Image (cartoon, rainbow, N blue to C red; front, side, top):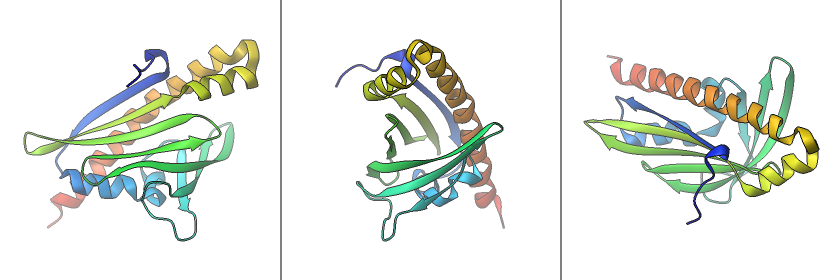
Amino acid sequence: MTPVNPDFYRAASVLVDASPETLYDMVSDVPRMGEWSPVCTGCTWDPGAAPTVGSRFTGRNATPTNSWETRCRVIAVDRGRRFAFTVEGIGVDWTYVFAPEAGATRLTESWHLLPEGVENYRNRFGDEADAQITIRRDLAVTGLQHTLQALKRAAEQVISRP
C-alpha cells in the first residue's frame, strides 16, 4: 500500500456507546447523512442501488456561500467494520471505520484527497490550487468533528431510549 500524503489526509475519531453494526447501519444509510454532516444536506441512491460496492448515489451539499451536488460510488462495505465511498470527478475518498473498544465502538471518519484529486485542483485552480486544497482540507477537519459528534449523539440517544 502506498503511504498517504499527510497534506491530503485527515481523520478524526470518537468513542460511541453503540455497537459497530449500529453505527455502520447509520452511516451506510447515506440518505440520512444530512442529519449529521454540516455540509451534506442529504443523499439519494440511484434507482435500485443499496450500500454495496459499486453502487452510486448523489450527494447534495451546501455552505453559506455555495451549493452543489456530487456523484459518489461506494468502494468498501464490511458491515460493522468499514464503509467508504469516493466522490467521482473530484478525487476524494470518505471512509468510516468501526472498531470495538472497551464495550463501545471507536468510530473513525477520514477524508483523503487522492492524487487525481490534487491534479484536478491544479488543473482547475492553477496557482491557487494549494490555497483551495487547504480550504477544503480545513473544511473537512471541521466537518469530521461535527459529523462524528452528531453521529455519537444520535446513536447514544437511540440506545438510551426506554
